[in-house]
Amino acid sequence: MKTFSMQHPEKGEIAYTDRKRYLWISALFFPLVALSGIGLYSWSGNEWSFVVPLVLFYGGTALFDWLLGEDTSNPPEELVPQLEADAYYRWLPILTVPMHFAVLIAVAWFAGTHDLSWAALLALALTAGLYSGIGVNTAHELGHKKTDLERWMARIVSAVPAYGHFCVEHNRGHHRHVATPADPASSRMGENIYRFACREIPGAFRRGWNAEKERLARQGKSAWHHENEILQSYALTAVLQVSLVVAFGWVMLPFLAVHNFFAWWQLTSANYIEHYGLLRRQNANGTFEHCQPYHSWNANHVASNVVLFHLERHSDHHAHPTRRYQTLRSFANLPSLPNGYMGMYFIAVFPALWYRVMDKRLLALPHINGDLSLVNIDPARRASIEQRYSTSLPRAVAA
Image 1 (cartoon, rainbow, N blue to C red):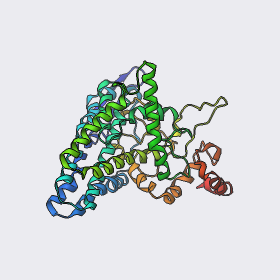
Image 2: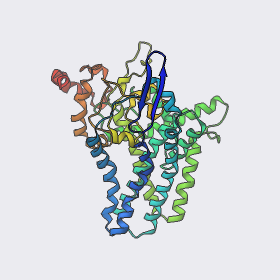
Image 3: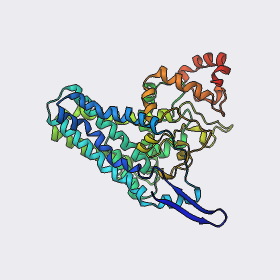
Image 4: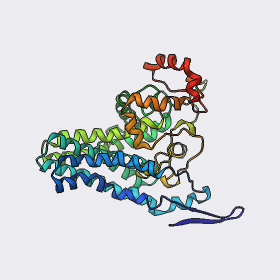
């Protein structure tokens, strides 16, 4: 296990060992999980085999989160430059980019060349979409970096599930408006994930397109100029997905539609849980306070953080967007989720269960302390929420 160290003039020797260092390399083996259903079907001939990758990704990750627990360790700030400079960490996300193309092509080939039921095709499309959704998370890690290579890799991997506007929208839109009512990627208290998806998916595209259009206009260029980063990614999407239709037939049309949507759903699920109900104060001049650590929900569960390149240390990410995943820090007394992201994704699909788990947790946060004026509430449910919690507030906060 590699140890980073230095001799500090005042503190003496400072040393740090990243206990997850060799767990990060598991990202290179996730394609085996995505393709496990095909392998099991080839051995058994049972179409239920295609459900196995979905169970492993969701159930397996949540189970390992419970078994492995949490890791709250942080690298000493003095050693962060050493960790940031370590090429091992930098290349791992980059190396996963071609794997997302390979998995989609492999699953599409199997779906298009075998006589399978529609249920089996659906399971294959969902599996491919799930892995491509993880690719959007890879784009998130790479798209925040400063090197041209990493930024290009982010655009390229976003092309796999036809989500080419992501990096532009996320970096120039979400990070600017996070935890405000104007942000389509920040969910509101009382807003279920299905209503949120209907607001977030089209809203994110519009905001991303407008941001890129404005950037090009400042340079005197048309929105349809070849330097449009969104169009660059979508052009690759067109080449990839049209090629799959040509190669494997019309069955690819519903297959790719499901694949794309389920990949988008992974990002929607992450956005839904990351800022649920959290609200930045509005200043007298109409601007909002700077984003604070308590404007993001966090988790330190080992397994899902490894799968998602430390995405769950979300407060530090918003405070320092260009920090690499291995240096993101955990802090005490921040909004904390009761499980890792995969477990919370599952809870979110059942709105009543989600509200039961999260609403009182939200109101009990120290900076809110039951004050609904400090909560981002769904306007459609504001009256019912105020009626419910105005009478049971002390009990809700105590919980």
